[in-house]
Length: 207
Image 1: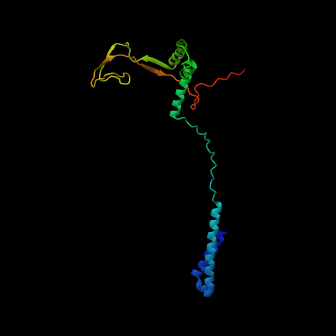
Image 2: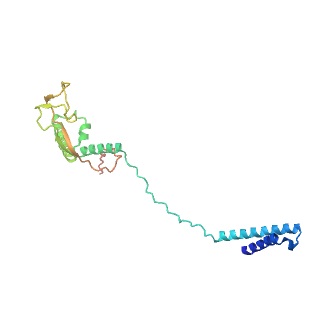
Image 3: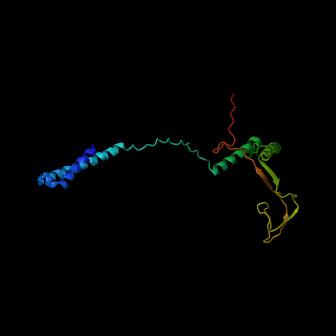
């Protein structure tokens, strides 16, 4: 259809341009024919444009991408809460094995020295077991208590503590009052509850 309109419009343009004398048209008719030619060419162009738009493939629509499944964020315990829970757990272990909290919190005034000594033996045995279980404890100073010791200027101030009349300049010579303790390993049980605050649960006997 656009071809017909184009051909008709071009024919009118050619006739009006090259053969105006032979047609012997009045100015009014000539202007009307010129307008008709313009309309025919415009219709042809419009039909051509419509045809192009109809033949153009629709833009491809990408299939919707399923949203990635996100796992709920798990709040990680703070370093401070973990450290506090480990201290409580260590204290709970001492209570379980040695009844250390019971012995420390109880008023021992009414008890005799023999009774306190018997209780202290149980506490000592339990605490020793826990310490050996969780630490590898060794003496800092490998010598004996009471012996003389001289420390140079580069001594380890974390391992040796000077007491008494300490001079300003080394060497520092004195008597070993205590050999000190250190540990080469720390083995704490894995935490399952960082909000733990109970050292030992209350016990209820059901009859």
